[in-house]
Length: 87
Image (cartoon, rainbow, N blue to C red; front, side, top):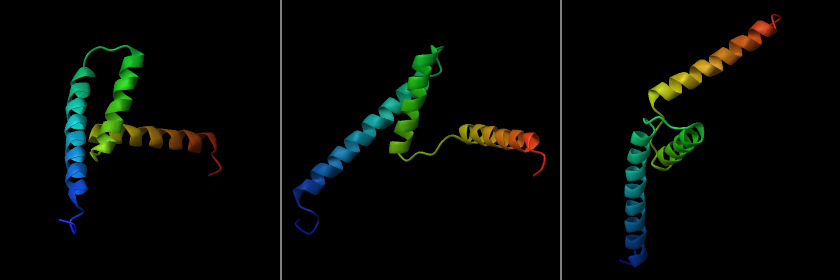
């Protein structure tokens, strides 16, 4: 038992499991809540909290979000290139 980290390892693992379960629960709640018609502040809070929970749970961004971010970056790049024709 000492080689495994002592009794504290069991407490730490239980706490990590409980935290993960709570994060998964609230992620589900917020993802269903965000589908409602929300005001701008509530929507922003939900989006940021969902992003934080997904990061803590090591869940990647949905493909739609990644595609949208890529479109925005490409659009900005094209705007810069169009405004500076020497390149």
